[in-house]
Figure 1 (spheres, rainbow, N blue to C red):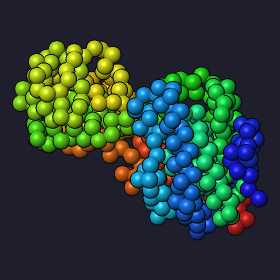
Figure 2 (cartoon, one colour):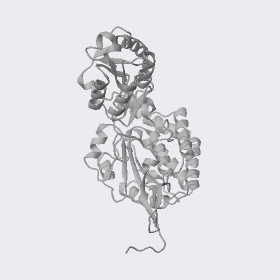
Figure 3 (cartoon, rainbow, N blue to C red):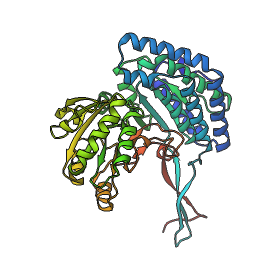
Figure 4 (cartoon, rainbow, N blue to C red):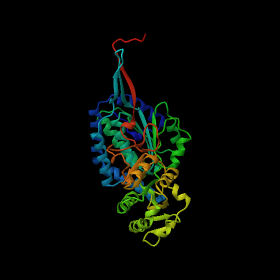
Length: 426
């Protein structure tokens, strides 16, 4: 019989059981994994009232604790968001299983057959803040990629995460997956986080999904390899050759569509040659959406009095992930000025250029080293689901192993499989 994820209190016990389960899960066939994911999706719908009741308790506690509106938005579940989570699981089912995929293969002159194959990492731990949807996204991706998963959510989503993890663990066990392949660590503080981050005997990778405080806490103690999903300080650069009506639409969507998301823009950079034509129209549109503009000295007179709340920008604004209806506005001399600003103040997440000039686009594409670079499109598309990955565990801004949305293939490594017929080396 399965032991529900919520009944295991020891970090070491959760990780040890995940390691044992991961060895067995790696050998489970695609059909069985997909059947387990389908059972999880069905169980989420069947137990929706229980899940939403638990989430309501978290929201009540968050309001009492004075959580900022951005965190409350991330925390909130409703019927539509739960349906989206379920659809994400079904989208993962539809994806190709990466386990066992041959990346390349060749025959050596001595007759040995060499294949480079994808295999699961083993045990993946995900540490996240106020995002109960990550619980199921992480479970779905881990199971499909053959990895055991250890979940460590924040105290603000304690009730939601416990119910979601229990629903997933129960359904997975009933579908025949190994006991312990879904584990939950919850209820502890920084000491618990530090303990999880040092379980290198059992855990192969940690993916933190949260603010800079979480990142700093892990950097100081982790002995397990970490892929950091950093803050999203994104930009939209409006070039001299931009279609200005398009630029207003792109800026609006990048900022307003969901300002609490990490792929929302925090600063718009505008070429001086089009600032007088572009900024008043942008300010009027964003003012209608309740956006506060924090403008540099040159941009300030072009946006002031156009319907938006306008305040002078400070140097700190360029380095801040507001996660709110606040947008920095700065004028630049050319595309290289925009690149310099992005590379100096950005977080390497998602940045866009709006332009019809091939030279400016090429310079921006090659000069900006972010995980996702957009041409004439909103930054809001940086998302595993939007990229056709079904879901994501996080968005990496690192340059090694994985960049951008962390999906199925990013949760695998590879090994060399060598087949012979009694070959010995002389």
